[in-house]
Image 1: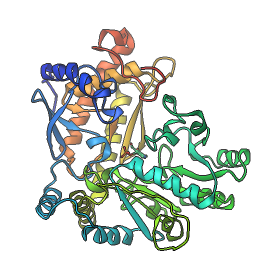
Image 2 (image 1 turned 90 degrees about the horizontal axis):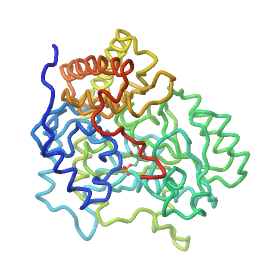
Image 3 (image 1 turned 180 degrees about the vertical axis):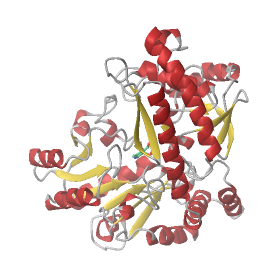
Length: 444
Ligand SMILES: Cc1ncc(COP(=O)(O)O)c(C=O)c1O
């Protein structure tokens, strides 16, 4: 199937873009949804979604590739989730004491996680990663946090953002409490512990990010960190319900001290959680009389019932159907198709298909082999004009179909064609508007 129709109307999007920055700093509630992350020829705002498709304010329709920043694991307005949420909403959404659904959720989520005994709910991933860091500091009596330098994001809180380029508003004392090592590199991990002996409270890391890992590697890393008196926090925000159900810790049969969950576990609803071993989690409890109290997560909306209902319904769908198998199959098809197109256009040195079938990302490189934001923006522009809402990542979910992948690949083919011409004639000739900029940059 060849694609002939290009999206040409972004009039309402342009009006939206003009007004929104007067109202909302950054124009969005996640920097990665912001205007500086998209080409000018792109939707500024979405009105609604159904399954794998979304519609923008101009009425343009797209196949969405990164479903709500990977929070959509089943599909937009996915019937069984919506029905469950509606049922729950009619019973009321927040009470002065815990809702009974909290125990149901706790029991069912933990039943999937051998070795983890307790769970705490929150609305955002950042809240749970920060809570994990706090617990680790209290448990070990140490201050430092170690995180992989080459991983992009763990929290919007100061302990993490202070270790990026964007340090404004974060005191130096706090910046110095996060130290870094090279991801998936045992030697680098050992070096950071040697540099700060008896000072590191925990390592926080995504289990599978850029390189395939093995059970042996993860176990060795965890064992080493334990031998140093520190804790291992496994951040399953992206791997959870994607790499495996429920996540990498079960896939590889390893038990981190704490794990953090969010994104896809409630199909886009705001439900995240921290799980872990009882002796650590219990520090946030109120039954060890006389022990110093630790203020763990305590939020008005943490027990909001409709998001918990969404999480329960999502979990049941994953248990009922082979969602993981479906997603991985589509991801593999996309990876193979993309690589074929790249080969055909002779772009092997310029577009690289990376990562895993459940989270496929592209890297874009210029003639000198340097990462190119200009070429990245151009490729996304061409995909988006062809009805594929694209940020360089395809994260398949249960509503994506084989036909969707065929359409994505058709657009990929035509976009690669433009990309090739841009390599010959210069991207300036093809790109409308400014190139995308990195989220983590010092200056606006
Ligand atoms: C690996 C990882 N951890 C934590 C977070 C923070 O989650 P949230 O945006 O829900 O606060 C993200 C968000 O992108 C993430 O990718």
